Length: 115
Image 1 (cartoon, one colour):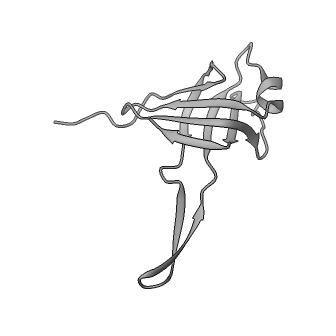
Image 2 (cartoon, helix red, strand yellow; image 1 turned 30 degrees about the vertical axis):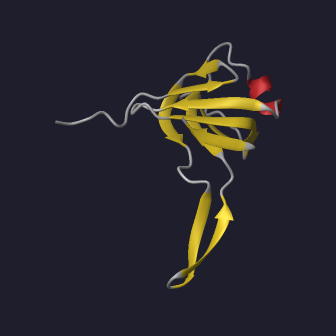
């Protein structure tokens, strides 16, 4: 018997829901390990993030998204997993495509937790 593990996701930025097209990403680990030599590794912190492809809809508060530096971004996945990014701010280039109104947004923050 199969289980739904992917599909519809929901993204909220400070309580405002975004219309998304898919492509939601969040880290599953707080550290990145790299082998130096078999049996020995180094560990680096991973910056918490949420990356999403959204649609620029009427009423979307772009000023808030692009200028606020202390947002809460919540990603609810089809499998029931929820990733909460706190102290979030927009990074990288935020652009909109005129052909399909698609926004690619990447938020980084102070803390990211799976619930």
